[in-house]
Image (cartoon, rainbow, N blue to C red; front, side, top):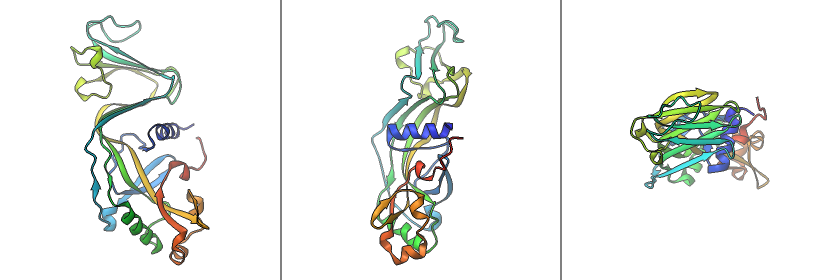
Length: 260
């Protein structure tokens, strides 16, 4: 299975959000784009279409994390302790070692996350449905309606069953204070093997999001995915307003079925 497909599916199952791919890609509320091969590709923003919206702020920060079950091992080393055999870390070094036992295993840790969203999504939906009926909104466009913004985050994805990374922290850190997403630790890569993605304590990431799209409703029975939209044109939607709705978009709805 493709790395991006495995990653986005696993995080969707864990958090209920779409995962940004590539993980470091910046997103904003109101971004318009397409979902293709588990990747959001930005085209424009609602502001480019003169659609205004208010933001529902989130003021409660939280830390979120996930690792692939049974496939990720994390070892914290305090300065002044003996380094494990085979480690590139010295006895005086503080650091973190992460080992993976299968391909496409994930370590995800995001600190200080907030989840702002577009406030009045009923009005937004009406505006977008009107655009679609008038031929000004493409059937495969989606819009970002909610974000997970992180003060800092670390994201690692293995590319083999022997993947490993060792991170060296600045001196004087105890094992209890080790946090792989903590910018203040000054983590640097001391050794890395077979990692397809290695984001280490980077700031201001938007690793997760939710998006909505124009969806088809055939015979009043909701049908999720592009297939329902293939037979609904702007003209037919204008004649039958009950044929479309504004609902959540998922990567799998736009997947071509390929694992390559």
